[in-house]
Image (spheres, rainbow, N blue to C red):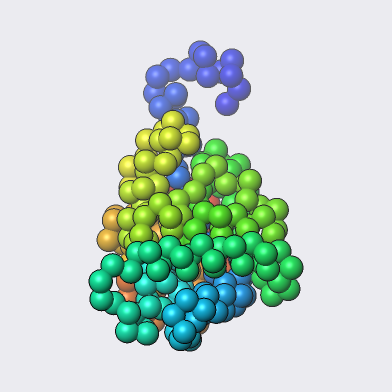
Length: 250
């Protein structure tokens, strides 16, 4: 509706226009959702943990997918029996070394790839006037390294990361706070949508009353994802128009 028409419209018509462009905050996970990161990060964590402790935790994809970097390190130490006492200093040391090596090696690493169905969905959300952010267990600087590899770090208005909360479970409420700081807008959970790929993404969204769009990049995870009641489970983001229409609903 042109601006001149808006100025002369009835209150009812204005309400209809506002209703048609409902406020949304779309939060995208990174690894497995926007991009396939390869195995370098997991191997670097193994390498650094072995360097610090003398043992390799031999982390598997199930040890890292859907979890924050600090939790992954604690999982690695737990696999080696290091659960007693305060291990915070050890975790911080490992995270520091890991991040430094990721910054050195990831830009030249050949395996990562950006999923071809991811950024068209991000762009479509922006065209609807919605804010698009990141919700990832990566440390902020690790996320920046991964996304800048593909020139998309700046595409997101803000993000919440593994250094904003130890547990990924807490990142949704942290996202509300950061959205206010970054966008000067308040969002209730019913106006937020989490876009992810793991059972853990589905779980934290369901437990917080947030709608979730979960893409099943790994068929072997489908059964577990379903157990956590994702709002919508898809095989890809290719049907952008259908997804955007669903985002517009309640």
